[in-house]
Length: 268
Image (cartoon, rainbow, N blue to C red; front, side):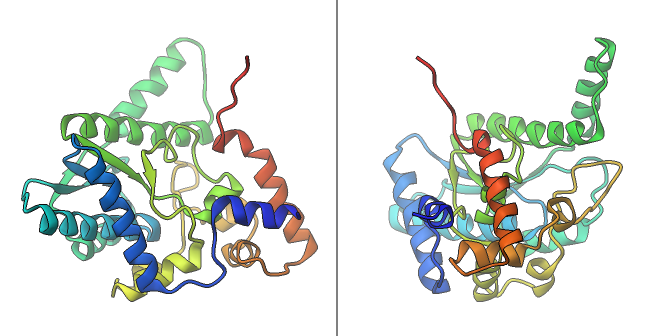
């Protein structure tokens, strides 16, 4: 089996999707998992104002609504976290995303002080980190906070990583991938857009240029510029279509190089 086919099979990606079916399958699957764990009381997602967290947040809110309707327990809730680093450049998008999602509760915690404190501690020990590594610290600080809030609220942390990010390893190890459940890992970038469009999301949220926005020295730097490849090209590959051989090799090289980020290896 070609590596392309192996990757598509391992990520359970469909080349064609029906939006309402995908929305129903994900909300029903999450509902079933939630109710199978009697201690759970909430779903938790960090909302950035980007496409992926907007989609996952909306799916979680729909799921909680289903759970409340079925169980008649009104205390179940979806908690949206705002975790900016200082002043967020696309603050308006984040507000628009929250207005679209309509979460039961919003908690905002600015991570800047914690990240700077950690960076200073390293510097005091003679360890100077790069801006890139500091960006990864931001992602891990956000996940630390999510788990603290989840512990207090008997919450399940829902991830926002899409298939295009997973295949390329474009996420922070033990940061944004350190979640309990990933709701959109089998959807590529344009499939996520289709679901948001079906859910009547404001266009500017799913048409905006994707950015992880983790580096101070390169604020709002587009993902595609960092990856040196277009999301459309990754999506074509993930849908089993024939792509330029240079693109294919680049994607597969990123997939193999980032294997350690997707799998924990045990020895002995």
